[in-house]
Length: 568
Image 1 (spheres, rainbow, N blue to C red):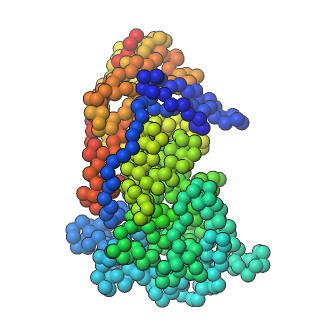
Image 2 (image 1 turned 120 degrees about the vertical axis):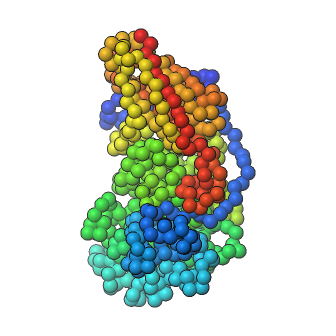
Image 3 (image 1 turned 60 degrees about the horizontal axis):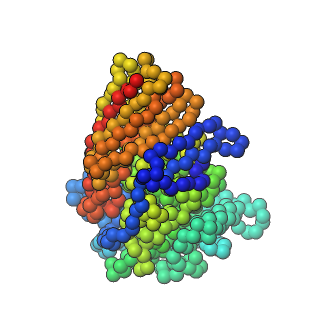
């Protein structure tokens, strides 16, 4: 675990050392790491805001129709939202259409809500039915509206809960405390208040906006949660908006109220993978409620930022559940050469991005930096309205560091997650891009990789036959120009488990060398870590792009060359 840190300047040190030891009752050893690079400055012009990029989906009939110009973005958003509840109808019109992912409903409905003004009258009516609340009943025939009158809603301090006593939407009638309310509703209320206590009270996020201005706000302006049999549609839960501001083209801001929908039991039969029962309710409420919080800042933010932070906060609220670990294999632990800010909900990468936010929280020793990023992304009248990646850059710069340094450090933490992260013993280590064995007869190797923005590559170098006990290894990196985002590091792992951590000082051309210990019998492995930490992009150039601010990254497909030479 990393709980304390020291800052060192570029002139003060090039080397940081830590030791890996087996976990004990007192916990694992605490390595230290701070980038030895100069201090950052803040600033920059405010970025323009556009409609959010559509949440990516598998290449199916709807995506092909959009790409061919047969559907506008608004029409596509309507059909994609409808497919969550009436998949057969959409398939009858278009052909093969993929089923929505179990956690993708929030962004799909967000895409629709943000584009309602672009629809014709009949399509707009259909959209509003999809965005209607379950208690709208007949007004919600295309979604998941109740078909019977709801029971009296139940309210806790900060939220109200809606359910029905019959039909498949009803929770189990068990009422152990004989208070006239099903136990599932009591549990939902307790889970929601615990979530509020963490996300709003303890972590300081803005509370969801009052929905008093909505046509059907529930008993009052408190956020409403609806219990529905979502398992029949393969959905865990979602938050949506019926805030009139969301549909008003004259409303210049992006803060809206929200309501949320959760399942009535999370049965194993309907949710055979991942959490189910109360644990599924806990992480779903923590996740979806945080979407309602995000809506109070900017409901049009980039998908990876919205889903990554919502998945991260699940474990902050309910630490013992750990359901978000299922996404580590679609994170940069499992897929280090997939860009961090890929907003692809269909493959799970947006959920895997949560490990980046866990890194930030543990690196700084508290999660405040993530809230600071949301405050910089704030699209309300009071906010600076930065896009996701720039907001995070500025939050990090406000602490005297650069995003590129922390992203490079993130790659180093991921090399040995068990030693770096508080719960890293259960995290997978990233794969090696290449493995080389250096021998006395084959005393050098030269190779290269191609890296997109915000990706990392790992190269293993092991001493082989004939390598002396005091040998060293000269590492050289020939990366693109430094302005394009390259960083490089190396680690030596001794036979006893001691790890020494080295940082390349790359020049303006992206070149640098390091000499590291490589004696056979002493060194088990050297790991070369190559990082493309570029955040340079051209924003708002193509809404079909799936990176931050619908942008086209400037530094993809960059060639990184490296060599290693044995020094006997």
